[in-house]
Length: 484
Image (cartoon, rainbow, N blue to C red):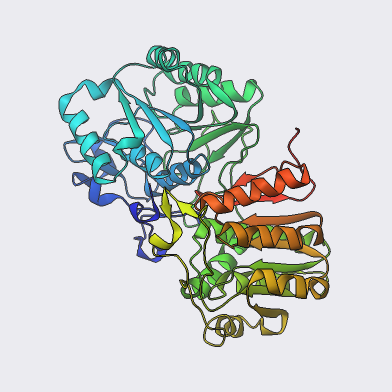
């Protein structure tokens, strides 16, 4: 799985009836589903289909009475799965593979259980779609019924799972039984996602996990999704389509609904639109930076902001915008970069077995002269006065500027390489104040970045409590450690 496999799109390319919550990466693997069409909801007689929701209802034209996940739901699944990249996931019920494709594109190792895979045409169609998406090697298709087949598979492979997507039989007692077996086979840090909670029978599964002490929440989507989680994992945040007059059915009382404020979303999307030509960061990572920066400002955590690895300056401008809008004290944003291209990587700077210099992102890549890039976007957002570009190699500039920078409330480490990341942490970590926030961009992409972070942990005798943002980025709070 690599960046090129996933067809990430800008939300401006969505139709009005294909809403996706802000803060989510958006993928659109439609080319791998040539039989997918938009259907009128009257084609289904299922009583729990929310026909009043004005979002596209996708189906396979060969069996047009059963729907796929809506665009919003599919991207909730994808963005959730991104947090579990490289770990094991289980899907119960895949139909024609639309949801399985989104899960596998996130880079998890996916087991799929569905009795309908016994039908040759469905099995072939699912396989073709997954091959088209380039993820067939990550997926194990299993014919059978849950929960019996789940238990059998777990025993056969000595397996537990970290992420579960339950979208099997919607009739009692199946959803409850699915939840029971998934809880038994869940890792300590785990998340279970449900589709079609508009059905009371499906809601029994989420009710069970809530009674068992799991954290729970609802996503207001076309068919209502539910999430249960425990341990060191967080669900994605979601804003229901503000154009829809949402309601909850009577069988879902006392559940919190994920709901970002409309003002926050409007502001974030306006910033992203402005900075998009000046950053390579995806929407999930930008939203994380926006949220962390706002948290620092509102909680008045003392210190300046520092970004190491600024490229064209889009993320730096975003952080500076938040400072200017929300900070209760004067702060500066130090944007550190060579601005002349990437330095030489080392032998440990590898992506997916490929040395950095052979990936197209090696030495000399990402050159971005200050005047026409970071200066330009900072002027556009009117934050020039609080952004300090620092040009040069981290090993040379960070020690020189450390005293001037002083206390650090937020550190964005986007150095890519092992040596660059070690330079950032060796020089600046002690300047990060207690409860200061640190986001590391390439932890899940470059082997060198991950190794540097863990090598630094060992040097300090600490174990950071890392929170996954997407397939590559993580963030943590200084002083919030995992127990040894």
